[in-house]
Structure formats: structure tokens, C-alpha cells
Image (tube, rainbow, N blue to C red; front, side, top):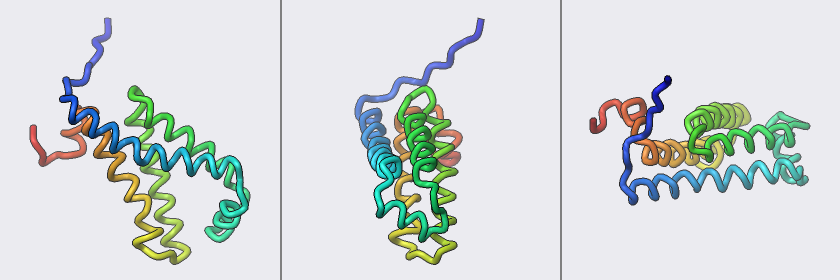
Length: 136
């Protein structure tokens, strides 16, 4: 019979800090996915400016699925990895079109940092992978 690895116990304050940090990018990404699924004109125009016409709805579905994977505790690591890939593509796109760094290029990083920190706070098993020089 397979052994189920349970995460070590986490203090209540650490758990809730992780949940709040995780909720920030989740809320933004759900809003972003919703706007792309509704396909409002501003979103369509920005996709054209970025060089991706007619991709708003498929991208909205992808963002929604990856965000839901991240929000569900059992698939949170997979969701974080997929969202990190999505963020990398967004960064590359903004660099390609010459957008400003602080407001556009690095915005995905502003989402990725609380996403990963929140995940590590919620699941300490990830500490050795993501914080190799941290506490043991």
C-alpha cells in the first residue's frame, strides 16, 4: 500500500499569511481571466497591440485553469509551475514590444513572488526546493 506524505504541521499564523499572499495573485488572475473571457474591447485592443489578435478567450481559459489548479491545495504546485510559465511568456512579450519595465515587463514578477512565497508558507515541504540556503 502506498504511503501518503502529509505536510508537516504549520502554525496558524504562517498558514494564514500564506493564504493571504496566495489570494492576491489568485484574485487578480481570476479578474484577468474573466475580462479575457468576456472579451471587452480594451482587452481585444491590447492583445492586438501585443501581437496576439484573436487569442483573448483561449488565453482567458488557460489563465482560469492554471489559477484554479494553483488555488486547489492538492494541485497548487502544478498550478504555480504553469502560471510561472505563463508569467515568463508575458514578460517576454512585454520586452518584445518595448513596454516600460516597472509597470509592464515586471508586473508578472509582482504576481509570481507572492504566489510562490504564499505557497511555501502554506506547504513547508517546498522550502528545501525553493529556499536551498534557508532554514532546515
